[in-house]
Structures are given as structure tokens and as C-alpha cells.
Length: 503
Image (cartoon, rainbow, N blue to C red; front, side, top):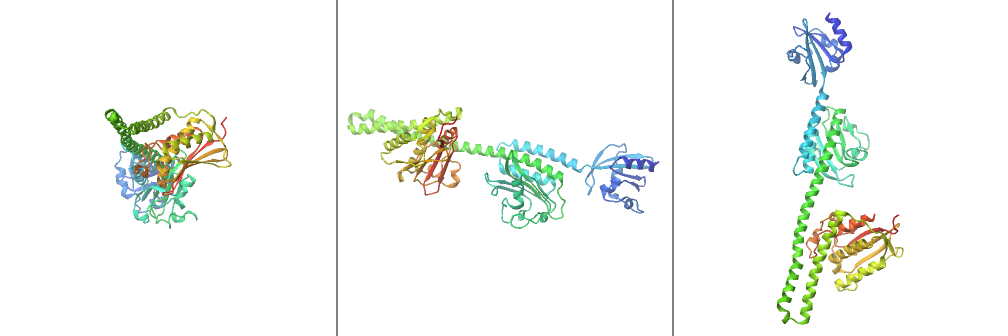
């Protein structure tokens, strides 16, 4: 009877079926058992054979009512076991649920990781990467995990590198994105290899092949942007990463990308807050100077006017006027920034006469500096005489650029305003002979509340708003802004406007 039932059971299930008698001798061994344990039926039932001898006693301790119980059975993984007593025999049905357990534990770990990263009061990119690397190594059992972030706009430079594993794998420091490590970044696809040494030609790792075998690397994606990669490695001869490892790594990469974006935004906002506090502190100091001067001149006029010469009175009144002008300039810049932030910029389109506008700018600069040649205007022969835009906004843009140039480099030579034609657009370039700008600082110049280190150390006052206002006004016209500069070689700021009025 047992034989007939066993045969029927073998036919209807792919699970491992093992039957033992009360003396714990194996009397039946299904094809599923042969597949799961790697022991053929002939080997399992041979005289004197004791397959699963180290596990049989524990399995028979399970309740014989057919209840499913999950048990780790090294080295075979985690098995779901059902035990039934059928007469003098014990029926053991076993199914490998290692992947289900790993997937379930991995999803729980990802959920926990997400909560931990998003609940941080002060999110950190480095902390997010370190957590992701540790989780990747834990959930896959890899020997090493690493996370790399790309420098924005680059496909080869690394901004962050975190390795959870032997540091001697990278004796020369953080690797660059090239060869095999660049493949997920370039193709936006997963790379999974059983052995790195068998990678196709042309996909070499940095320098020579790393001394590892299995590898799985996935791109870190935030929308359509590639932020970097997440990879797991193991020594040669270790377990080969499978589809489940790849699936878990892809899910982890998605969580990591969200955490990185969250941390980057938080770090940027924290830096902006610190920068704004610094600027506001500077602004308080800056505005005290004209206020103090104004109070001094007014006190002088009130107390000593009867003893002052006409020239002294004129000088005091002129000083008082300049103090008010300076305060007015500061206030206007702050009000302009606040207005643009709340309402944006909506140009009232017209054709703007460049010669007239730049002529006014040149005359105003001469009056302000007392130098007739403070600003020089150069018109390229191919440049249009007019551009399309809002006359007031265009003037605001030019005034900000020329004002900055006079402030930071005007005492070293004239400020040159050049008008060029540029493929249906008008390009205005404002060149100064000042100290120049470090390349690392140029990318942030058009952000609000930004001042370079050289300007902080100068006598020139400002809030770091002028160029951000320029950028927003030019963007409202569909134009571009930029800067070209080298330390010690002056700076050229440029903007472009449409030559013809948009439909």
C-alpha cells in the first residue's frame, strides 16, 4: 500500500518526498529529493546509506499533522517541511523556500532602510550610501559591496565612493567609471557575471581585473538621470549571484537613489540656509555703513552748519545723498529678488534699441565713477542694432552686469560691453579686468545669495543676488547666461536675447 501511495505522490508533486520507517531508515526517495539534495535514488536507497542523517532526527521531531514548518537545512537552504505519520512510516514533504525567504527578508529590510533614511533629521549622502552598501552586502551574502556616485554632467568622475568590504581591492583609491564599471552607467542596464575574469574583451575593470569572481552591478537611476551604480562582488569560487540577487539589488538601487536625492536636496538646502545667514549678516554690516555715514552727515549739518563753509555743506549734503543712494540700491535689489520669487518675470515684449540703451548705460557709469571711459561699447559689424525683449528687464540685466564689472574690476581698466550676433540671437558680453574667478566657483555664480571668496575679501559690498536676478530675467526671455574667466585674467559675463520678437 505504501508503495502505491508513494508512486502516486511522486507523480503529482515536484516537492522532495522522503519516507523513513520507525528505525529512521530511508525507504523512499523521490525525483524531487534527488534534485533538491543532489543525491540520486540509487545512492539514497543503497544498503548502509544514510542520506540526511544529520537532519532526519530533527525533522521527525516535527508534529506529524502535516503542518508546514520552515527550517534551515544547511547546506541546502531554508526548506518548508511537512511531516505525516502513515502507519509505520514517516512521510516528509520538503520544498526549497530559500528564495521566498530571501525576497521577503529583503523587502522588509528595504522598507526599514527607507524609513530610517527618510526619517533622519539631517539627511546625509554619505550615510545613505553607507547604509545601501551595508544592506546590499547583507541581503545577498556578497563578499564586498560598493556604491559610486557620478559627478553631474560626467560619465567618468566620481564624487562619492563607499566600499563595504576589503579595502585592498582598491589600493589606488576610489575607482573611476570606466570599463566594466561604466557599463551600467552607459547602458542603464544590469551587469551580472559568474566570473569577472570571463568578462568580454573591452570591459576591463580599472587597471587590471579585480581579484573577484561573481559580480552584479546596477545603475542608480533617479527618473531619467543616472546617479551612479551599486555593485556586489565576491571572491572566486563563491556562490554565483542569481536572478533574485539581481532583483533585490535593483530594488535597493531604487531606494538608494531616492535617499540620495533626498539627502542631496537637504544638504543643498542646509548649505543655502548657511549661505543666506552669512549674506544676511554681511547685509546687516553693509547697510550699517551708509546708515552711519548718513547719520554722521546729518548730525554735522544740524550741529555745525553755521560754522561750515559752503563747500563743506555741499560735501556733507553730497555724502548724505550717496548714503541714501546706496541704501536705495540695496533695497531695490532685495525687492526685485522677492518680486521675481513670488511672481516670476513676464516680459512686455518690444524691440529694444541697443545703441540708445547702451549709450545711457555708458553715460550713467561715467557720472557714477567720474571717468568718461569707465564703460566702452563695442558693436560687432554683424550684430543687430535691436533685440526683442522687455526694455526695463534688459536694462536691469545690463545694469547688474556692468555694475558688478565696475565694482570688482573697474579700477583696473575700462569695462567693455560687446554686442554680437549669434544665430538669430543677440549676445551681450560684459568684460572686466578684475581678479578673475576660480573655476570651482563659476558654476554657483548665478545662484541666489552667492558671493565668491575673492569678493568676500574685497571692499565691494553686495548680497549675492544680482546674477541670480540676471539669470531669471534672461530665462524669462528664453535666453542663456554664462561666464568665462580665469584667476588673474578678468571675467566675461554673457547673456543672449532673441533678435526678433517671438510669435
